[in-house]
Length: 160
Image (cartoon, rainbow, N blue to C red; front, side, top):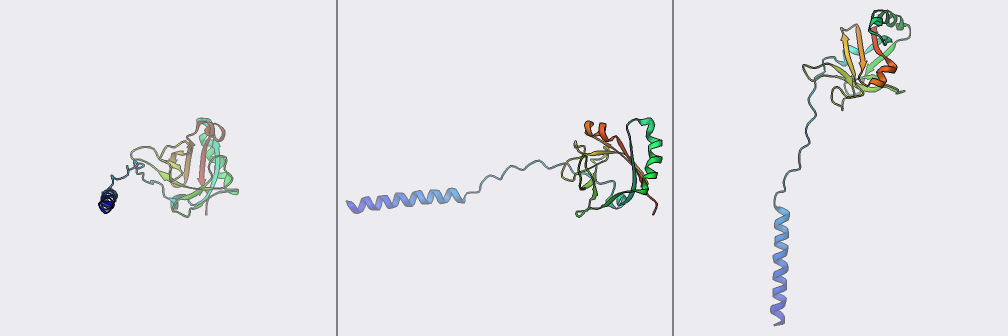
């Protein structure tokens, strides 16, 4: 009798172990996939922006032409945009004392922005490109508070 109980217990343990092993080996449902960030293009390359720029800013649209002339004079103490380590370009974000690597980004056919590469186009910290022709770059901050303090930025490429 004692032997049959022992055999029964061992059989039960073996059956439970087999069930546990079967559960562990059955394929699990795949983890949910996070939605991908929309793909964006870079209509302005880092190579187009790297260099020395005169910089000025305006708050009223009627001051745009005068500000462009002031930006040309800023080439005496240029704003330097350098190449970033990951293919972007180095510029300062609002209220930052060190430059960050930024990229140009756009979801076609929408506007072009300059901002952090890991954020979607049009994020609060981005700047909208109002004009770019290779020699003049005009950027508007999307954050209304920052725009109110810094205004619309005008960059004019400095002569070589």
